[in-house]
Structures are given as C-alpha cells and as structure tokens.
Length: 560
Image 1: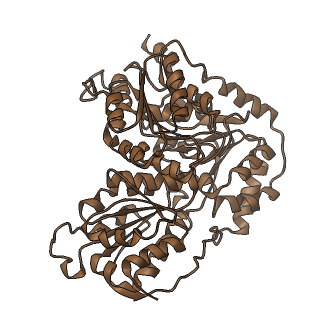
Image 2 (image 1 turned 90 degrees about the vertical axis):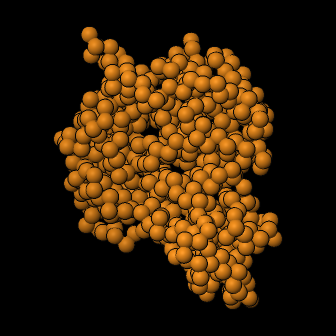
Image 3 (image 1 turned 30 degrees about the vertical axis):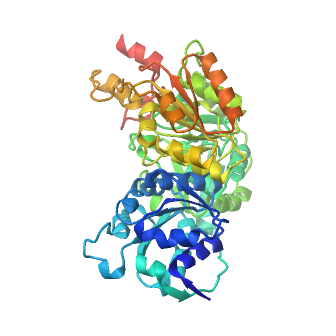
C-alpha cells in the first residue's frame, strides 16, 4: 500500500513493538507528528526539552531491556539530544533517535534550523545516517533497531529530510527478526582455557559489570559464584546482578567502593571479570590493579579485551551464553579459608548509618525500608549517586538507573519518567542533588502534565557536593564556584509545576514525607536539607591504586 514517509516511520515503529515515544515537535518533523496523531496505540510523552526526551528513552530502555525511542526536530531540537545520546552510548543502552531535517534541496545551504546531526553524532552512536530517499526509509528504520539491540547495545540516530517524510512510497509490513545472542567468537579453546584457570584457582574473585545486566546473566553469575565459592564485587553499572544481601557479596569496587571489595583484588589469585570494561573509576592505577592475580575477562565486545587492563585469558561473546557453556566445565570447590579472609575484609567497611541527623546514607536506608528494596532507583550524578549505590542494597538487575560512563548531571528526572512509563507497576524514585535538579527540573512539568507518578528526592546540601568534597580533600578548601546558597525554593518551584512537595530537615520529617509521597499517586518532590560538609566514604584518590582506599577514620589518622 502507498504511504507517506511519515506514516512509514510510524508503521515501522509498530513493527518493532514500540509502545512509547518521548519527544518534542517542530517544523521539520511536523509530518511525522501528524501521522502519529492517528495512532493512539503509541503513547507519546511530550517532554519539556529534547534532552529530557533522550534521557527518558534511555531510562525506559534500561528499566525494560527494550529499545527506547525519541523524536526531535532539526537544528537545536536535534542537537539538544546529543548529551542524552552520548549518555546512552557510554553505558551501552539501546536507543533509536529519529530526527527530521530540512528538505534535500536545502541541505548544505545553511537553511533555517539545518544541522548535520548525523555527522555530529557519529562518535557517540553505533550508527547514524540521513535518509534522502523515501524508498530506503523503511529498511533504514528496521536496520536502526537491529543495530541498537545487537551485540553490545547502543544508540542509533536516523535523520530524515522533510520532503522524505511527505513523499509517497509502497510499504509492506515486515515481521522483525530479533537478534540472537552474539556467539560467533566463542571458541572451545577459549572456554577450556577459562575453565582450567577457574579450576586451578584457590582464591577466585568475581567482578560483575553492566554487561551482565544487559545479557540477563544474573542466574548464571549466581550459579558460578556458588559453585566455585567465589566472593563477588560489582561496578556501578553491574548493581543487582548479584544480590546485596548474599554473604558472598563484597560490595562495589572502585573509587567509592567498599574497603573489602577493593582490598580483595590484592588477595585473589584469579579475578573473573564479567561484562566490565575496567573503567578508570573501577581500576584506578592500572599498573597496580590485581597485579598478583591472573585475570580472566568475558565480554561481548572484543574491543574491550586488553583495552584498559591486560588480561591472561578471555572469552568474547554474550555473557549469559558463555557462562551457560562454561558452568558444566567448572568443578565445584570449597574455599573456606579464602572466604574467611574475605569476610574479615568485608568488616573493614562499617555499614552503620547515623540517624541523629538527616544525611545521605540515612535517606537511602529509609527509602530502602519504605520500598522494601523493590523500587526502581534512578539517580543523577554526584554524592547522592554514590550513597544510593552504597546503601540501597540492590537485589535484582535493572533496579538502578544511573549515568555511569558519561556522568550526566540532570539525567535522573527524565530517566525516571521513562522508567515509570516502561514499568508502571513499580515505584520509581529519582535521587538528585540540588545542583543536578537545577539542570533539568523542567521535566517535572512533563511528569505532572502526563500524570506520571514518580518521586523526586532532592538531597540539598546547597553546594556541588562531590566537587566540594574534592576541593576539601585535595584543593586546600578553595571552594571556587561550588557554593549554591541562594533563594531558590524547591518546594514552591515543584508546587508551581503541579507536583506535591515537602521539605524535610530531620529523619522523622523525611519518614513522614516519603510515606505521603508514596500514597499520593502523583508526581511528588521531597527536598532533604543536609549538611554541606557530608562526604562520601570510602574513597580512592583519582589515579591511585585500589589499595589506597580510605575512610573518615583513616583520614583523621593521616592528619595526626
């Protein structure tokens, strides 16, 4: 049947099972929005800003495992997506961004709102292109979804000229072929080598990264740990793959990881790295990292093998499939002495939280208690992000939605909207700092306009907390442009955008506010006022070895 390019775009989305799109209309994409008008089966969320649309599509994808979709018009509409696309790229999130551009005859003329967005996004997408021929449109959209979700997932951008959105073309519905797990690079030799390393090890230690979440390998990871009696640590992106309440769990590894997890890498004789790229925040001083141990790396992306850390052996392929192949080759073992050694290290990080005053850890613990550990927790970036990772106690994957690689302030509110759209039966809470909330607080209007009952918890210390922490510890307390003391009233701002809002200055006030917010069934904001000098510990200075982790007690000793 003959359809316009715009109608073809909508039909292709339906082919792919898309039920939600986040976006903002404009001149060049008007034809697409006009076609969307007749398809109520696709829920469109009108965001306040295109960056919010990209973050919402990202949050939807992380929470559901599906491909997130966002729309934007040409020029500034398209460029406003860039930060969100880069965020998705760094964290391997499947996302398809569809933008519109000026007509073919105007390309290259510096026409009104013309921008080469496909060129702009080449470094931050798996694939980006511009469609200038309507006969190629349907196949391009289909290919975009295939690329976004195949192998190591990531964002794809498709730019469509306005005349293509209006042109007519024959359309025939095609049933999508869902990609299979990547297995073509898995070899029997690599599996045998990996199994031998594990079987010969007496002190195995497992590091879990975001790749385990993406592949859905949580059951296999847990089976491996139990079978070989290996303690487990994780990265920020790997949270929830291994349950935080399991005795074998050591906590997060890296700059703000637990002492036990960081010191553990110097006691093991084999580090089994599952779906992690050994980022600088995880590995610190890479020459010192687990230098006494052999390292086995399993990752779907061959480019990550030996990129940051030189390893002794590797297997390239979908993590879930690799572990399914590997588990029968691995012998059961008991490592009582090793487990006792790691249990002693685990005790080096205190899990006590002061409830005398309102503080970050106490806020996170109260949220965990109120939600029974079953909420989807989104965060922005900074101290509150680390407190959430340290104190919530994630037991399932896809429960922490956060910007790990790019570290995008202002990410969380849009992401929480997307997560709630994808998982409407889950409580979704975004934890933000006051600096982050300022960046994209306009998306609160998106939540109220669309009736999306997310809860926004603002941990307000009136400073840029993590930057100030660094200034305190390493810059002689020279607080250059990190103090945010001003007259902004977050409660009034939130109420002005249609949300329920409360301010809490004590643990009791926060307890009551959270209880009301969870009962309200509407967008809600809780401003939590804490001390500006509260810090995140433990900590490793940038570029230092993981063994150099320190906490407040260590800091006091160092100052004597």
